Image 1: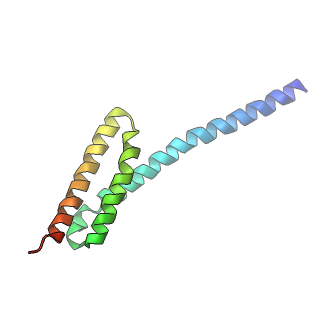
Image 2: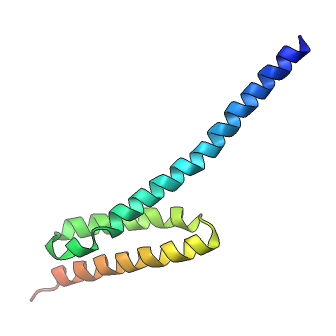
Image 3: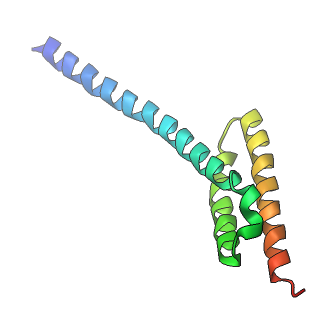
Amino acid sequence: MRLLQLVRALSVLVILCSALSAAPAEDAAAWRQEYDSLCGRTLETEGMTEQELVQLLGRCDKLKPRIENLEATERKVFLRRLQLCCDLYRYMLDVKRTPQ
């Protein structure tokens, strides 16, 4: 009887641990996919509308806190790269809003 309870308890523990370890891996893939999607569009900025650029800047703002939770080296690299992408989008938005 006690052995059965122990097996059940260990089974529950294994399931919980695997669920917890899967969540960060999925989150890591999700932020990286969003990052690639955002910064992969930098060559298209000339053809984008103001609304598209504003949406991209909003997505950049939402992604930044997720990157800030990474380990130091990875955080430093990806925050800098994200900032460069955001700066380009912001610059292009300013160019499009400025009367010529």
